[in-house]
Length: 177
Image (cartoon, rainbow, N blue to C red; front, side, top):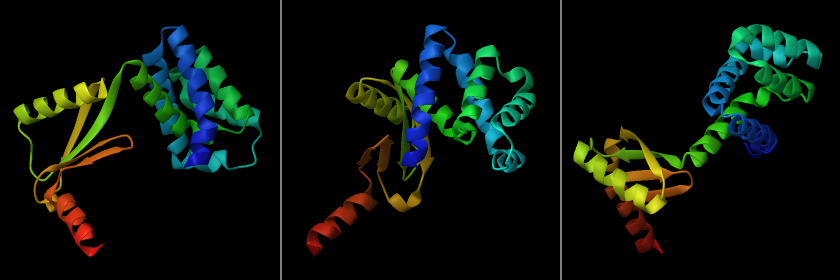
């Protein structure tokens, strides 16, 4: 994963900076996610691992994408093909989305709770997280009854575990040490 990110990051940054400068962030996001889907297609995976030249790969890829890419998007694909990096497009799209969220001052938050949360609880949680993170929060909720009670909130690398299962686990570790 780290090699994937290391290789993809400069492409994502370059695409994002260009998108910001040309005021086309949404269009670039759509193009990158479309190309990521193309790369993930099983037939395309075989083609990308074949012994085709960079130019052949770029032409084939652009033919598949047809009207989904503007001229700059096509040039981006050609550069990635020349550098043998087309297979990294899904990670480029993910990193681009993260840069877009950072630019918009928003963050995705995963909330796993033991039971469904009410609208009021979700609003309070959202407001609290927005205050703590100084960003607009997009909640993605799911239910896991094994938590017994409470919830686990994940924001990037930050994990807030207020579940009964987590508390019992920490108590058990404390008692065993």
